[in-house]
Length: 274
Image (cartoon, rainbow, N blue to C red; front, side):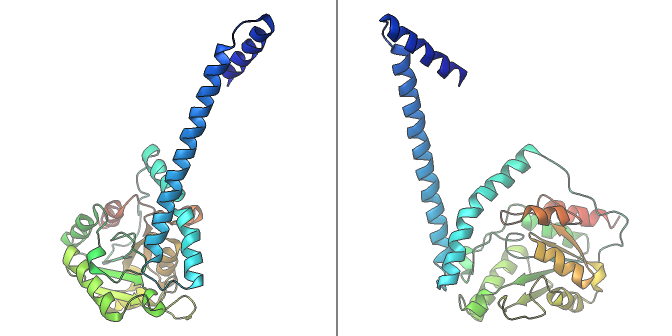
């Protein structure tokens, strides 16, 4: 800005003395080019956000509440994702260790944004994609002798976004990609149903532990939002938070253990078993 101001002052002085204000022409052209590039970047960002919102709304049910929620979160998620990407790029911190705790006897994992890429209300197995390194992380846990189960909220069933058969097909695809999980603890209810199994309530964690034949305190639940951490705490289990684009800063600050990805989370859990 000092250079721009200097040139403008020089150009005013030149105008007073009869000199041609060529620096002012160059500066104005530069500012115009900068403004044009800014408008192009804003248009590209807006187009990308619109496409992201369309893809999230398309699966349905497309009622007013759902559409407004998806529009609002579609605007918020890209900046949040960019923030987390920059944070991870610039601040390579190791996971907080799991120290002085009993050995884990079972690993429980959230589905969307922890095992697989989150596709809202997904009822199509063809759209299931593992997150980078997630398959290897699950394999590492199994190789260490840990049974692995999935604990997931799937309110799309209650909302009518997909059928029970659709959900079963999606989970069969997840099993195909990762190898069969030892248990699936699925909450099919909506947030307004007041059930005991929808995270952050502990019911699904307790059910998974019972199926695996272990105590809840011997389980570690890995997930990407505060509801996963709260569900584990309510059940008496431990937790590791792996932040995603939708994780709030307060949730990261309050989590007892934080890891960059599922692989680091599993490494932390296995480290506590040595």
